[in-house]
Image 1 (cartoon, rainbow, N blue to C red):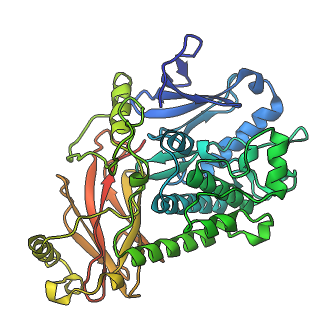
Image 2: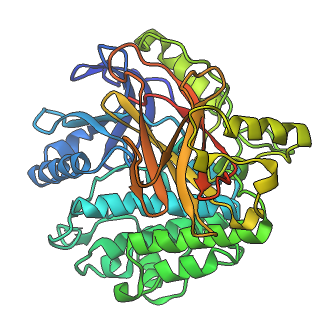
Image 3: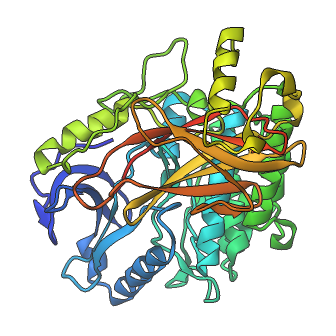
Length: 481
């Protein structure tokens, strides 16, 4: 949520005009800023007393260097920084959405399906962070932002290169007691598996609404982190084994982030098969925020879906329009898709869908008619989607399970006023797509960064060797910086 600037706040940091407050912490304050071209950014300004500490300036330089190493797919992409300024600052892409801490505080614990989607997103995030040779060191609910297209891990304030010394400063352990690993709490050297423990603690919080090692004086909490079992009462049974695995006291007994991601995907597929329906969306577990940043009133809740947006060239936002932009984004709801929930199809709709599947230009292997339909349990299933930006391109990524072990390719078409033509590609010849086990990413040119950006929406699916299609997922695409 964005607050008003206070009289003591600077109007300008570097080239960025400040238009609102996003938050504050022990290291500094975070503002909503706008570049000269009108792009919203989050500007982190270090407290003056810390800026006077040479050791802290060095550590802040480490934060900036670490953040630059990691893809903006999983973090808020670094836009600009000045670590040598009288008051050091860091500007990142603005992520529209509440923190996990805010969401759970306002609306309570997440559903099982939403927790699995969160776990998958954070596991992919940590995989990228660790692949860059970085240990985050302070993963906690307030450092997880819930963007429309997935979680973003932010604040590398105490991050370090994975091969360096323990996260300590002046003999003190650095971090957040409730979400530290036992080795970090004890001041021992840490590695990527320390972040996995923190991820488990974050999932426990999201599942129960409580800190897994309780509250109290920091020393008391740290003692429980090192010696006591976490309190997971109320966590969905589907998540308990995964959380317990992450919260093993011995780092050697925890999964690496890619291993955790594989297990989460398996649990998601098992839940789909047992329910014979698509999984809930992340937003089904947490309702949308209203335009003024408040959660909606209690009562029956419905899936928070982005508003329909027709393709149209648009100018970049200006400083005067920033408040309206944030209100529109807040009103859109937030979350990341595990698979878009679809209503049962009538016979007429089924026939219409079959005609679309047989449209000209689609490979014969990808065409399907009513007579060739397979049981839903053997058809490929979309288990998640993600979007991210690289240069002028926006990539949509599809995660899928393959019960029949014969998924052959993917297709998509523009919908809701977007005029992307229908395309279909095999996994063996994906054109510009990037194919990995269980996922495929495909780029679309949205002219990001040119001043001629547009939003669009596509419907995507996976098909198998017999041409049977998964339920489609509707994916909203937009430039984010």
